[in-house]
Structures are given as C-alpha cells and as structure tokens.
Image 1 (cartoon, rainbow, N blue to C red):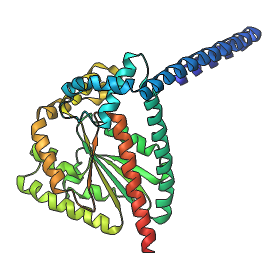
Image 2 (cartoon, helix red, strand yellow):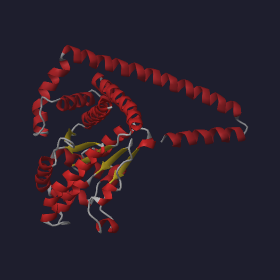
Image 3 (tube, one colour):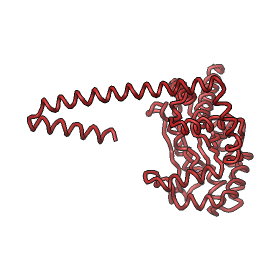
Length: 338
C-alpha cells in the first residue's frame, strides 16, 4: 500500500512538472504535508491520552477488577485455559481495549509487551553473533496445531537474526527421492553449519503424527520411530547442537475461530485448505498421538516446550525467552569447558 501511494504521488508530481504547473504542485505538496503533520499530532495526543487513562485504570485496580468480572466468560470461551494465567489476563485486556475502541498496542500493557519483544529480539541478535564466533549450531523445531501461530512465532525470532546466519525449512510431503530413503534423511541434509541456526516449520515428528494417522507408514515403523528420533537428537546434542523443540498449543474452539476467519478473509484464504478441515475432524486422534509423542521424546538433551498460543503475543514472547535461555546456557557451558 505504501508503494502504491508513493507511486501515485510520484506520478502526480511528474505530470505537474511536465504540464508546467510546478507552482501549483509545490503549493499542494506543502499544504498536504502541513495537514498530515497536524493529523499526526492530533492522533498522537489522543493516543497518549487514552494510554494514560489505561495506565491510571490499571494502577487503580479498575482493569484488574473488570478482568475478574470477565473470567466466567473467558472460562466459558476457553474451558482449558487457566483463568489465573498471564495469557488469560492479556485476553481480558485485549477485549477491554477493543470495547474502548483502542488498539491493544495503545494500552500500557500493550506498549510494555512491544517494548519487551524488542528488548528480547535485540538480546537474541547479540547472542546470534556470539554463537557464530563460538561455532555453536542451533536447531529450532516447531510442531503444533494448524492455525496455532507457528509462522508468526518464527517471524518474531528470525526478525532478530542476521539473515546470513539462519535458514527456515518449511517441511511438506516428502519428494519421490526422499521417500526412497530413510525418513530422517531429508532432515539430516538440512542441518545447520556450526555457528548457524536452522528453524524447522514442521519436523521429523510427522512420522509419529500425520504419517501414523494417515497410514503412510506401518504401526511397527511409527512405533520404532520414537527410539530412532531420540537417537537422532542425541547424536545432534553430542555434536554440540542446541536443540529447542516447540509444541504450539491452542484449543479446538480457538482453531475453529481462526479457520473461519481465514475462510472469510480474502487475503487469508490461501492459508486454509480442505486438508486442514479434514485434519480437524481427527482432532481427538491427533491429540492422543501428540500426548504420546511429547511423553516419549521429551529428553534432557532435547526437551519439549509448550507454547500456549490462544494468545499469540504471549506465545511469541515466551518462545523468545526460551530460545535466549537455551543459547545463553550453551554459550556459558562452552566457556566453562575452556
């Protein structure tokens, strides 16, 4: 949109110059600039006023009181969500800000969250430089429900990194040459170089989820896969890799709401497919497979981290903190050994 408006402005200026109306173009440009500045100043004042009011409301306990009144509604809408959690608190704040006609980012909590996000990204950027010098490879693996927010989560992590030092691998169905080999082969070929980061959007855990439930492998093969995966990750850990595994969790009602939003929003319809709806019909079967996967592959060298993503903003900040802690621990351990 910015390019469109910029192009129209440039065309208008060029046409005015060619038509010999330079004075009129100059006057119009100055006039519009003044109006734009006045509009921004007035909007900044209104935003500052509302932000101040929200801060006073939070400090006085009004927001907390209103949030408490909303907890029965939150419990009804999200039965599996702990109503005392930070995620529930942010959902209440988001709702209240919308009722007041505010963007969530205009509230004091929203501004604090944005500030925290920026600080965490800056910290991760610094660590990325250090792990490159120390030659520490990092593997970040994402699994989760459809529409859980994996892409947005990955975007906030990669936004902090040097593009030369990471690669994101979106994993789809295996190609014919990949099917002819062991299922871990295609992931082995995508491992990062020392000092680099590889982010997997879907992973080798498809073996014990989608391949298991859709009949793409035998029961013996997916049962055997738990030990194969643990051994695979142990080899990576012994090599010196930092392994961070995320399961991005949402409840069934939240998924339905996001599916319907995608279906009804033209610019988001590419995100929803018939396969997503078919997988949703097997929610209970997938839930059983996920629980078994988390139980059998949660190890000390490659633990699972569950991101509660009914609130995407909360999940993004939590993921950044986990990545930062894991990298800092690995760098400290490498320093101690020397």
